[in-house]
Image 1 (cartoon, rainbow, N blue to C red):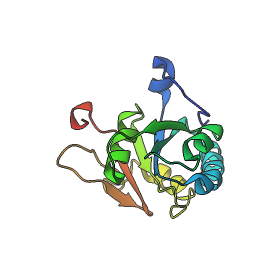
Image 2 (spheres, helix red, strand yellow):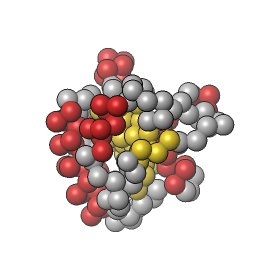
Image 3 (cartoon, rainbow, N blue to C red):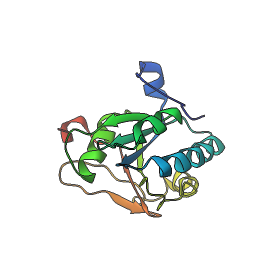
Image 4 (cartoon, one colour):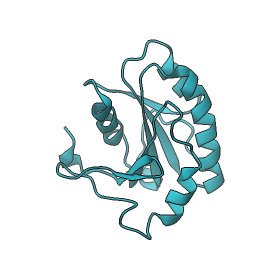
Length: 153
């Protein structure tokens, strides 16, 4: 079951999360309006306890509002750039697995099914993230295990 909206985390909900989807976005309102319903449908089909986090880079087109209306949690990145958006999203979740997707619709939500099925089977599909590690790519989206708090600013 997908978590529709989480404005605050309770210990019970946070500990039950299986997956977070982090989506960096900057002026992507129209794409977010298409992406989030499809993503939520795929998550529901998989029966996962998941949160969707949109890391907004200061959009002026209503991206944050559109994401919130569609059940995503919006975090505002404090530093500019794609990497900063990812870090803001990573810091906002307690989920043990994180998947990143671009808001521009270049990643199709259907890849989640294969990722989730294979997450334990291959070390190349997931990775631990720390200061010296890079993200691992699978099916066009990056996946990683939750970074340690010491790796985050």
